[in-house]
Amino acid sequence: MDPQTQNLLLEAMLDGSQTAALITDPSQEDHPVLYANKTFEKLTGYSPEETIGHNCRFLQGPDTELKDVQKMRDAIRDEHSVTVTLKNYRKNGTPFWNRVNIEPVRTGGRLFFIGTQTDVTVEVQQRKSLEEKEREIERLSLPVLEIDDGIAAISLNGEMGVERYRRLTVKLSEYVQQHHSHSVIVDISGLYWDEDTPVFDLLQLQDVLRLMGCQLFVTGISPKAARDIGSEVDKDRKLIAFSSFKQAVVSAKRAGSFS
Ligand SMILES: Cc1cc2nc3c(=O)[nH]c(=O)nc-3n(C[C@H](O)[C@H](O)[C@H](O)COP(=O)(O)O)c2cc1C
View (tube, helix red, strand yellow):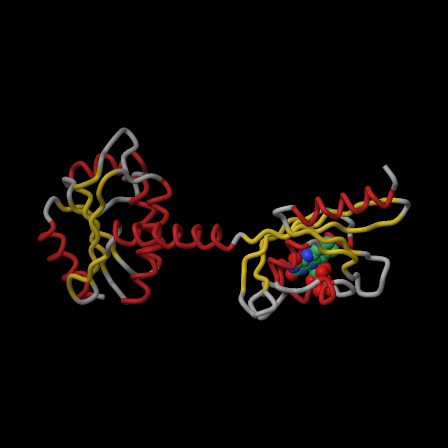
């Protein structure tokens, strides 16, 4: 096959590809595009005349994260391949999430870069809405209630893994700080108990709250059980526990009147 036919076939293949692709020349001033396929034009709205001879940064705009641009800059400088997902803008101004892959290629003793662009807007939006839903479920499954002036209460249900305790601690600390709570009542009667008793996690939660000037009261566990298990963990750190919620509220109110 003669080189001209070969080139035409290669170009037809690139233009028929589902992936936007281009080639850049780093030896030229400002590292311009040498060639861009038809899919690049379809994706971005920029014709070959508007693309060729320019640096690809014309796709960037106000919400493009600088750290992603920096990642590309570093990889190009070090002649490494890189993949980033960043916000780019079409010619008509509409933003899209672009997964850019950049690969250095050496041919005939010269360095070029091949870039592919994929619109991953739907994927990014789905991931964001999933994360939002997860946060909402977490918020609803750990609802903190203000039951009296300075007294917050929360009821724990089901299984509490390490991650859920971590989120509970973050959530309660934020709540206590915002609402200036002096006491937090945590009801654990709905908790699923197994050999990993939650006492150690509750003691840690108590330590964090104490640092913020807030007292933890635990209900739904007999005071004796709390003492017994607590002393197994650490003799000097004890949980203040009540079997009834009412008793805990009375004690919390008393604690509040002294604080
Ligand atoms: C092959 C290749 C493809 C590129 N494709 C894109 C792209 O699709 N979108 C984008 O925002 N930047 C892209 N860039 C990155 C920019 O051209 C530029 O390198 C980046 O903005 C960092 O350089 P600067 O600090 O000079 O702007 C590409 C770079 C190369 C080498």
